[in-house]
Image 1 (cartoon, rainbow, N blue to C red):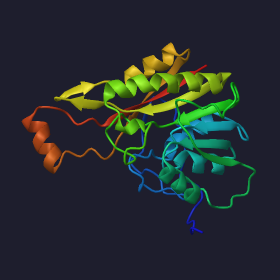
Image 2: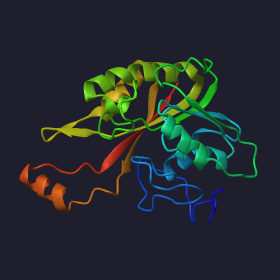
Image 3: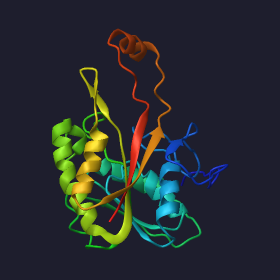
Length: 246
């Protein structure tokens, strides 16, 4: 059992505008930055508090390192965490293996975000998820169906059934939050984020919010500084957090 130094952030205020910045990424409960690409717990904390209620049923179908699960448990939301990678699910079980005085239920299951046939239609109160950004970070050693091994066109194609399943399982009038980043090819921006936004729009969602989330690990030093100047490109230092409504 892990030793917990503190259960809550030292200071927390609900975000009130569409630019979010968390220089201190958050280290309460069992949170850490050891899982590559995991999001700051401040993000799901804000989303869960704004778009769900206690004892709601939440879904994260790209659960990865388990950050959303931990926050849901702390905030008394029932949650299903799905991932295609069993190594990620092992980490999720480790991160949520703590006792906390509420009734939140944590469900962890191997599955494919493109086919959530084990989730009933219109049964989810809130979706809160952080998919891979195409093939920027590989999260497994070639697991069939792992979207982190897809090039950008393949990734966007595979996000269509993800969006369709998200729409199917979500209750009418409820919200789906998706964090996405962009990439570069031959020095130019490939705007995956807005392509994903359009895919969710075409699946039936309405885009309620577009939030710019600042990244804090994009210092222009060494290799990237040299190449940024040599090839004349700016380092991408933001991601987009989309909140969709069904």
